[in-house]
Length: 456
Image (cartoon, rainbow, N blue to C red; front, side):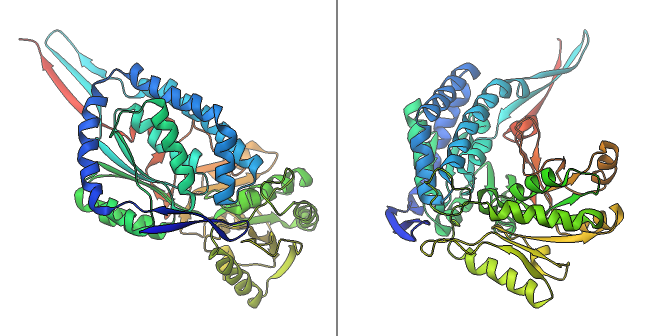
C-alpha cells in the first residue's frame, strides 16, 4: 500500500512511498535477533566505530539532511540545520559516555565471595519516533540502544519518513551490519503491527493518547517501555525581571518550531506588577516574527506539519474567545497556500479554557495575570501533565523554593524549552514513562545481571 508524503508549505504531494508489509516484519524481526547476537559480541570500540562513522556522515551531509526535513515537515531551514548539527554533537556524546554506564561493577568482594553486576542489552528494541525533531529525538533512542549492543526496528513518523530513510541511508553507509537496523515505513497499520512483535523493548515519542495505547499493548509481554509524551508546560514571570529579556525568551519558547515541541511554553503566568509591560514586549516580539517559506533565510515560523492541526488550534482559540478571552496579537500576513497558522497570543484567559488545559502543539499561547507566587504555583500545578515548568526571577532561592513544589520532570530558572543530553528527559503523570538522555537514558537499553561468585 502506498502513502503520500506532503510538502506542508504548498499542501501538495511531493512523493509516494510503499508502506512496509506487516507480514514481512516477523521475518525481519527474526533476522534482527540473529544480527543482534553477533553485534553484542563485538567490543564496544568496534560498535562505536560504526556509530562514529554515522556521525561523520551526518555532519558531511547536514545540508541535504536539513533540506529534506524542511521540505516534508516545514521546519525553517536554519532551524533544521541547527537540529542536524546538534544531533552530531549528541551522537558523539553518547559514543563517549555510553561505555562508562554499561560496564560491569563489583559491589562487594572478600576472600571468599565476589558480588558483581553486569549489564546486558535488551535484544531487539522498537522505536516509533517523533516527527517534530526526528534527528534529535530519534538519536536519543537508537544511538544508545545500538552502542549498548541492541538491534533496532525503527519506524519514523509518517510525516517525516524521508528523513527516516535519510537516517537509514547514512546508517548503511556507516557500515551497520545487515539485519541489525530495520526501517519500517507507514502509518498507523505499521505501528500496530510493530506492537504485535515480541520486541524486548518499545520506545515511543508522541501523544499521550497513542502512548497509552502503546503501553497497554506492550505491557502484556512485560517488555521494557519508554514513553516520551506531551505537556502543557507553564512559565511564571516574576516582577523583579528584565521584562524585555524575559518576554523575548518566553515568546521564543512558545513559538519556536511553530510551537510544535513537547516542551514548548504553552501557559504563561505573569505577576500583576509587570503584566502590562510584559504584554507590550510580547506583542513587539510576535509582530516581528517572519512567517512564510521555510527555505527563506529570515523565516522564523514555517507551516504546521499536519493539516488537521489547523482546525484543532482554531477550536482552542474559539473556545477561549467564547469564554471571555481576547486576542492580544495575531499575525494576519501569512501565506494563503500551505498549512500555516498565525502566531496568536490570548489574554484574559483562565483554566476553564482548553488553551490553558489541553496541549496545543502549535503557535498559540495564553497569558494569565497572577498576584503572587502562591497563585502562580497553584495554577502551574493544575494540570494532568508533568513535563517541564519554568520561572523567571532574579532570585535563585525563590526559584528553587517554587520549582521544588512543581511535579515535573524538568524545571527551568530564567530559561525554557531547553534540552541537555547531560540531564534525563523524563515526564511525569500524563507526560511519559522512563527517561532518555543522560546515564539514565543509556541504562534504559540494558538489563542487569547479578553475579554471586564464591571461591572454591
